[in-house]
View 1 (spheres, one colour):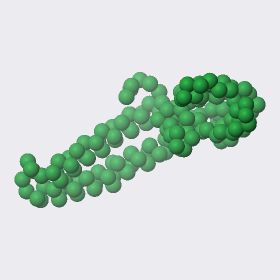
View 2 (cartoon, helix red, strand yellow):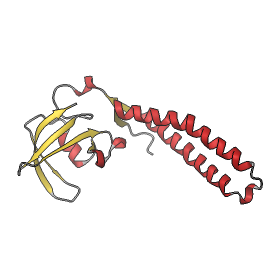
View 3 (cartoon, helix red, strand yellow):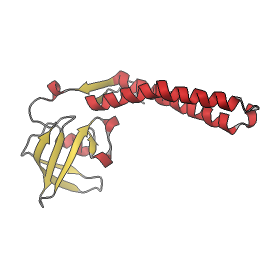
View 4 (cartoon, one colour):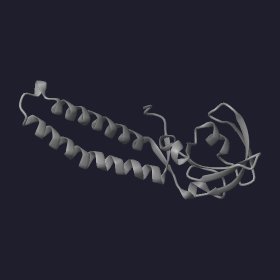
Length: 159
């Protein structure tokens, strides 16, 4: 991860990271330590697959803890006061309508919060960049992941 790049998060996204960090540093670490103790009790560690699996899980957990700490150290949380008015910004849900009348909703989030299954798109994606700062009724055009340029009208913005 680039240590110098600021990451933008919603308050919800930051809280999810804080919660995950707490889980990984507490409950998950304790579970892994218990598995290591149990695996050691089986004897010879050189041929102990349970021990090897627990050590691998411990390594992955510590790596993820480090990654989350780094993300939180460079994260900037966008709050309601910074959003202002009824413009599209990080944390808002935008309803778009294409030229055929088909409506689509997206929530604009920071890069690390992106989840297409939950209709959360990054503020750094082509769609996110095109929508940031738009108001209700604005026309916007961007290239879809399929490579097609499409035009939309912003028909709703909610927090």
